[in-house]
Image (cartoon, rainbow, N blue to C red):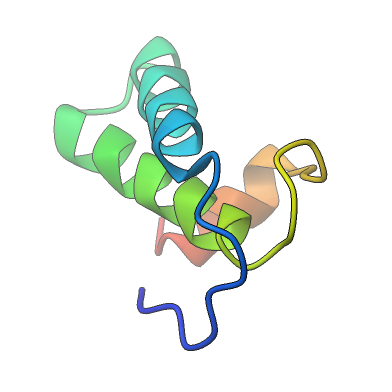
Amino acid sequence: MIVDHPVDPTGAGDSFRSGLLAGLSWGRSWTDAARLGNTVAYHVVQVMGTMNHQFEKEEVLSQMGK
């Protein structure tokens, strides 16, 4: 995914890591876990601030193409 209008990159790395670790804890492959991390980071950079994010598992998984 390409972010057209990034707002704030703060927390993008942490959010990627959280998605990666969540994916691995759900038994996903490294590739799918990295896709999950990318999807979460994609959303984070489009919002100002570091604590304004809520995701539903099913929504994020559908957005990453799984």
